[in-house]
Image 1 (cartoon, rainbow, N blue to C red):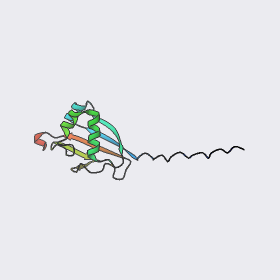
Image 2 (image 1 turned 45 degrees about the horizontal axis):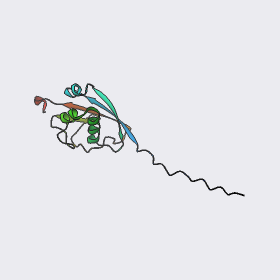
Image 3 (image 1 turned 45 degrees about the vertical axis):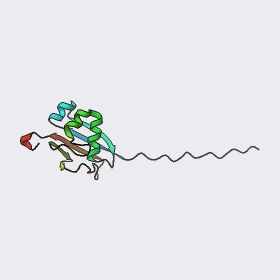
Image 4 (image 1 turned 135 degrees about the vertical axis):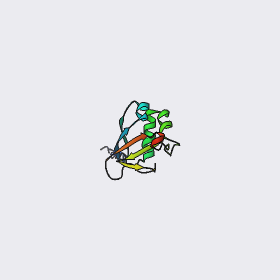
Length: 115
């Protein structure tokens, strides 16, 4: 009688990191640069506002990043970012606080508006 080896259980596969759907609304000059007024991102649940802007930079390129960011971690002073209707000043703020989706609004302010 020939013995068959026991089947080897497949290695545990890590579950994908939970994601959040982020609706991004763009206004003013940003629309002229991107050619769009909205887009949707799928980001890891622990993503920050800075991560969302970096993802937009991958999509829309260096011209977009130059327009909205001062450095890789700081937005330009004329860029206003809101998250679910609340003004965001801290780019390390998490996008997903409690929901499975979020909305980010981006606008560039002209000089007389505070930009």
